[in-house]
Amino acid sequence: MTLIPFKQQLDFLDWEFGVFFHFGIRSFNPGRRDWDGVEMSPETFCPDALDCEQWIRTIKEAGATYAIMTAKHHDGFALWPSKYSRYSVADTPWKDGKGDVVQEFVDACRKYGIKVGLYYSPAQWGSRSIPFENAKAYDDYFIGQLGELLTNYGKIDYLWFDGCGSEGHEFDRERIVAEILRMQPDILTFGNPKWIAGIRWVGNEDGYASLNNPLVVSNTDYSELSTEMQTLDNAMCLPSECDCKIRNTWFYDLNEHTLKSVDELFGMYEMSVGHGSNFLLNIGPDNHGLLPAADAARLLELGERIRANYGTPLDFSAPEKDGDTYTIVPNVDWKAWDRASDPANLSNCVMLKEDLTHGQSVTSFRIYAYLPRYRKKKILVFEGRTIGHKVYCRFIALRCSKYEIEITGHNGDYTITDIQAFYVK
Image 1: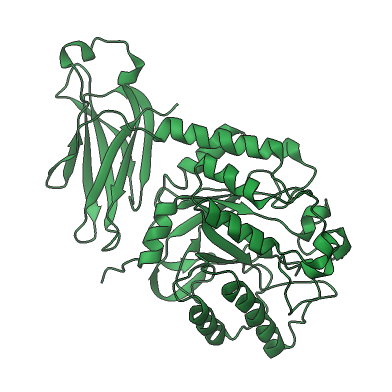
Image 2 (image 1 turned 30 degrees about the vertical axis):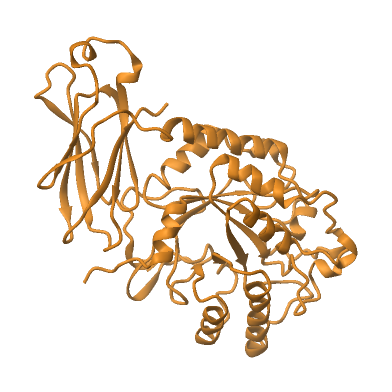
């Protein structure tokens, strides 16, 4: 039986590119690391120029469609005035304890048409934390805080759970899931699929998905601290997301020299979105509450690189289908085309898309390029596995008189919805 993605999963794949914002008490304590045990006083949290609209305007210009903010990280500090905690913005000098970063973030997303995502880590450490040993009290606290996030800010599109650090606690999973779905019936979740089927972690934080990237899996990575993949009770349809950092830390730190190049970030985009996953790039707002100028500029450079290379396909015909073979040809003046030196005649990438409304089917394919003068001769330029939402098939630049895509393996019926050619620089 073919497993079919539900509507929110299909919508998620259309989002393609999101931005993660790690912001919180750590943004004001450079050098701190997860689980280092060093207490961070709420008195240090005071963003004197917080501007969530600047964050969202910038990512919108870069082409992102969704945003996620760390409402509460492992340190336990809540970016909203939580009545379940003594460690939140209400306990800080910022706005005399009356501020709410979550509200400002959600409002900015809605103003600019960006999908709203909130990150929540069940785990926490420090003197203000609820002890894991009291299991029911901890679950009550967990549900209480989630309730504030899921009932006080309108529709939340995406809830991002981080399982890191909570491996030793046995949550009342059924109770928690029932409460989440009661409060937000249509919400999409990221995290352990044994809780709620949604989006799975690709298994690394480097921004890359394998060229073989099936929607249906029988085991998953779910925590950075876990040494083994977890086996699911049954195979599940779980699109993947590639989370990664623009610097070498998630939160703002004094490390601008670690800012990744546009070339590296563009490669991460191609190997996430271009391998059928979503691309989730993290930027840490600084201790003023603004995106650092260098990071914002780099993000905009990346957006321009993506648009320049994949915004407009080359002028090829619509795909023609003959059995399991599809062909596209350039729309050119053939009398001059094979003798011209115009670089616009070059291509080095073919993009394929598969209709996933009835599940993923294609398991292998080949791409052949027909030569510019010996037009009846073809050479193999790419062999692939899954297609899914989208796959970018890159190869050496050439002048091609026709592309032929042969589907060599599939599980049941399939439909290729789009084929395009590009010249990627």
